Image (cartoon, rainbow, N blue to C red; front, side):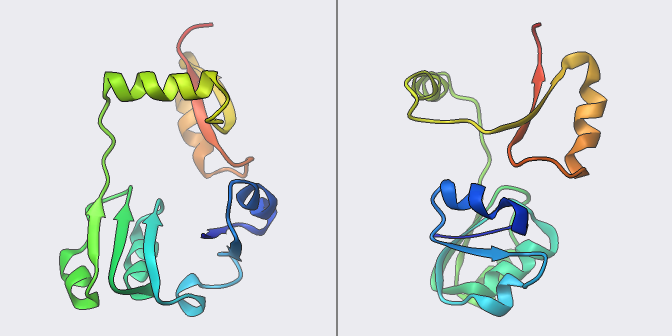
Length: 139
């Protein structure tokens, strides 16, 4: 697995399982990579547009941000999918058990009380440790 992130997050990303690392602030992934089987895009925009070209013919692009450009996928000879998470009671119960058993470790960068929801939203662009921002609904 090859992962892209900022240089200061390399150890964290490698700890998650990345065998190779690319600092996206100093090198463009599409200048460095080609022939990949799968790209998981969690950024969208220009990053998504540049992702088609690093896949092998028949490769798969999965984006979490927006529906993919079907014409670009066809031109590149790849399959592109927009992955949307839908709540499912049984799956959420399974995930909760995995967290409780220590088999799944959520990474939390920051927590905010619900009353500070706006501050939580605005913190997304600020420098912070890797992980999710969590709103605490109950004290």
